Length: 121
Image 1 (cartoon, rainbow, N blue to C red):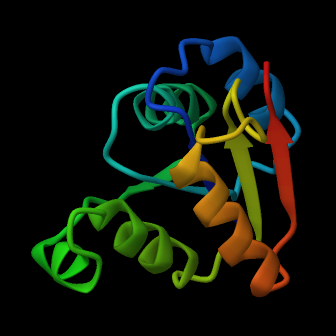
Image 2 (tube, rainbow, N blue to C red):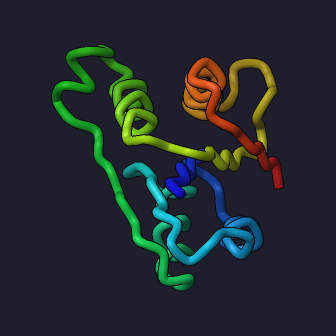
């Protein structure tokens, strides 16, 4: 199973990630991005569980495709790796003008009929 972990760059709770990863099988591959907060915590916690980790970074092509918003290109590419489940962690998810990146990946996942779980704490 390939699981994308995404969310807030300000996320500071490794415990929430640990709680959710505890439910996954040991052959799970964790895919995440290159930001502080959720991505950094996801890598640490996934390592604790012994999961394989695919950490992806924004590229020049992402910035060319989405000028000023390279994170959108990264979101598209991460989902295109064959993600089976998205775990999104953002305390402000659903609030106006907040969580733009998280909302973007959730919308893309829904369009692709990929299951999404959203955690605000």
